[in-house]
Length: 123
Length: 253
Image 1: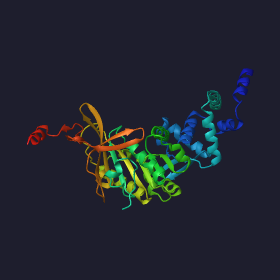
Image 2: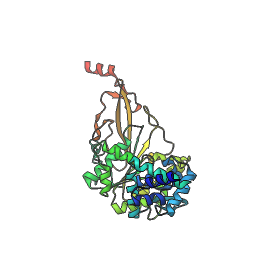
Image 3: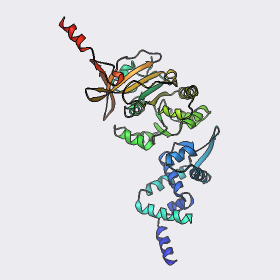
Image 4: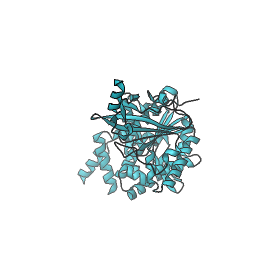
């Protein structure tokens, strides 16, 4: 128990803004993929089926995570004809956080900590 | 007549000065012939040399691949995006088609916001996955192309040919009929070496060069060179020397 607390404290030693973003928005690996995808392709508007294909993920899992990201304000869900499509929010603050998160993800130490928090959040 | 210059050395001369504004050009070729490079070059020169912002609509390649491939030619697409002169949109044919048909769709809004004058669609072939009915495919692509023209865009659309060497694939979808300019890129085998050939097969509303020209892809992009001399059957992919015996007999006289 004590050891777990110590690990938790070490893993929580990251930029508070990024830690909050990680805990509230990037709380699954599929979401991480989707946030990275939209961060790198900020002008994409597409259906869950196509986004799942781009991300190389299962459609149903992707659909649920896209809906959650939209509910959290990271993405915008809209309707185009009979299709439900997703695009990146135009909110500059969230876009800035996404870019910060993606840049931080290039660092192995940060990735290890981020993975720890996602796994803990999944328990 | 006003022309939209591609900025590609040799090609604008073939097009008698460039493409006609608000027209659609199909660039058809096998993998690796340079369709996307030609399209990127059209967009890049439009922005840098002619102050015409551009959009790249990609149905398969990620924007990061465009950044990387463009950088190989010294074209900084990231910088152009930061400056608001270029937008690379990754989407699907079904979403793009409905978006363009809708009032105030993303492409329309973006084109107006950035004052876009050019668009590369890479590739139109992906519309084939929307329907297996050739007539419906022709109808869908016709609507899509007209939507681009309505927005004042001069469009280059790529089309993937499955044929590496040899005659062009036979179309049963009628796409060449709905576009204005039709450029073919082909591999040609001559004396155990593979060359690349370019032919402007059709240009609605304008005269154009009918020669089959050689082209290279160098560190600066596509450069169209002189026509193939001394061979016939170039577009078959395996040209023959032009009637050697006839030429020799003729020369003897």
